[in-house]
Image (cartoon, rainbow, N blue to C red; front, side):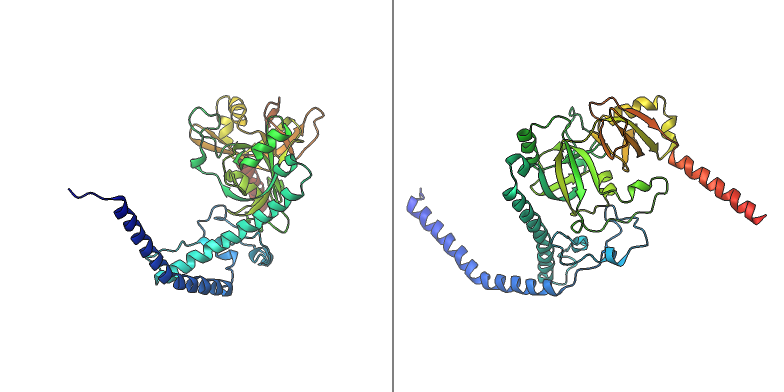
Amino acid sequence: RPTTTPLDKKSSTMTMAHIGNSIRRRLSPFAILLLAYAAQLSSAIPAPSLHELPKTTSLASSPSKSHSNDDANPTNNNPFHFDPTSQYPRPSLLTSSSPFSFLLTKWIQANSLALLEQAVEDHNAEHVATSPSLADSLSYRRCIVLPLDDRFDPPVGVFSHNHVQTGDKMSLSRNFWEAIAKSKAEVPWLFEVTRVEGVTSPRVQVPLDEFHPTSKNLSRVVGGALDFRCPENYAFLPHWMMKALGLRPRDVVDVRLVTTTPPGSAVKLRPHSNSFLNIHNHQAVLETELKHYSALTLGTTIPFDYRGERFFFDVVDLRSAPRGERVGTAKVQDCDIAAEFVRAKDEMEKMKNERDRKRRSAESE
């Protein structure tokens, strides 16, 4: 029976290596020409306007019609700007006119994201190099934000299970966990997400809410951590938090560990629907659902789930302990906080419509 000797195996391996090297030598000139042509072509293609953002894009499905020209055309000199239209629609070999155009489109998209990631990485590296202490270098990062989804849902038995979107928890990188250990921060561990002037892209325009005007110019939100396993220089936020800050996917924000948030003593919430107040013992439901929020921010709209239905509440007033001063952010975890409801939004809209109807009828008479 013929057997394979070590010499035969070695010669077979050398043959395969020779064939691989031969193929690479023949293809390398074509790859170089392709990359050179793609780089030249991508630099000549103007960035599309944000008006071209597809209607299916998260948080931009109902923009206001009154976009300013400045918001519609962010400066191309901003290295932290990622054009969201560069990924829509996704290229497909079936719809592309040729494999070359498919590869070129993919290269342009990857190049745009790589430039953004490199700009964020350079900024964070400079911060680490110039920080006065190790704890300070770990407690802050400039991050690219993406929305949380059900893939981040913790397993059954974990406190935040089924509350990824109905809580203030975000997925952060491991350096923040190390910052907590170095700074010996006390629970609840809170993180401030802030829009950066001149860096974060213009806010997503939403219709003005006359019953909740403080939400229009909100620039920071405080929340807790869901986990510390997200990639470096990224942060994943719940949908309501991205909407509160007017963020699009892959916008750039600053994230910082904060230890000075005062404890809360009282909060006033405005339900969007009066149906929540019709729930038997709705105060107990509120206290149960508030446990999934480590802190509250004045001007935000937070969601609760109850028996398969999602309810929304505007944070219209927030007081700190022990003096009851009005504050922008306050801790609610491990705090004795009094929650109070004000008139529901749908009820206020009915009252406003009734007043307008009476006024019009009086004017017509």
